[in-house]
Each structure stands twice: as structure tokens, then as C-alpha cells.
Image 1: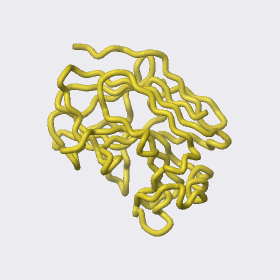
Image 2: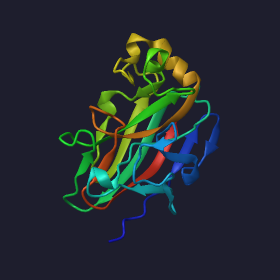
Image 3: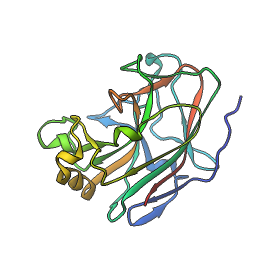
Length: 211
């Protein structure tokens, strides 16, 4: 059956204003050295009457998996919080599966990335990707949901698992030179390592606000 259309989307980012209806601003990836790790997915989410959406790959990890859905926000200072609303539509009994850790619940959470990241996670690049505090990670489930995260929360986690509280200057440097921000799909063990569904399922962004 057709998946339901959803309510008005709005995006406020950086010093300017854009609308989440602009699906072309978002990228499904990540793309690292020419390889897109979101296998079986289009490069962009699909525009809808009220915003954008994508369908999860269905059946098995071989069918594909969605990892990162991100955009370039421009400068975020002096804003201090991200608030995201989204909806998941699927039939009863559908499971969402992390392709690397299928025994764990599938999750969605926020992340941000500093410009110039090598994706090596070594040396200074340990502090170029930051994942939102564990308490804000949400298990993927049908219905409408909200995530709210302060940008100065000391529990943001670097790619090697260290908190911003242990190196607050590194998080501030990433925020001052931000390249991408968005949503990651995976598990609590591997935040952005990909999710698929066992039956047709759709993710729709309702709003993404940097306040």
C-alpha cells in the first residue's frame, strides 16, 4: 500500500535559510575515495510534496543498506542546538537490521564532520567526525519521532569513542569549520555502518533545524 505523505518540512541552517523540500541539497553516502558506502541507494533522497524521503533497502545486506544522509549547512555559529523530526512508515512486524551487527537494534542518530576529513580516524582526524551523545540515539521504529541535541554537549563522541568533554577544543574546531551534518544509520556499536529493512519501509524527514 502507499506510504502516507507527511507534514510540512522546514530546515534552518547556518546564517541562511533553506527548505528541506530541496532534496538535491542532501547526499546519501558517504562517498569515500569514489566509493558510495550506502549500497543499493540513490545518491539523493526523493522530493515529496512536503519534504523528502527514502526507502530502506529490503531483504538482506546484499540488497543494500543506508549509512549517512547529510548536507552542507554552512556556518552554524552562534546556534546551539539541532532539533530533528522524522517519521518511519512500514507495516507491522518489519525489522530494521544493522548490516554489520544484525544482533543489535538498528539506530538513527546525528553526526557532524569537519572540513578536510581523511576518513582515516588517525591522528588529528580522530576529531574530525563527531557522533551525537549516546542518550540521543534512537532505535528505528514506526511512527513520528524527534531528536534534540545541544552542540556544546560534552557527550558528543569522536570517531574513536572519546567524548568532547575530554577535548572540548576539538569539537569547537569541528563546529567552526564544519563541512557536513546530518543523520547516520547503524547501531550503538557502529553508528553509521548501515541499515536495511525486512519489509518495505520509508524514512521521511519532517524538519531539521539548527537553532
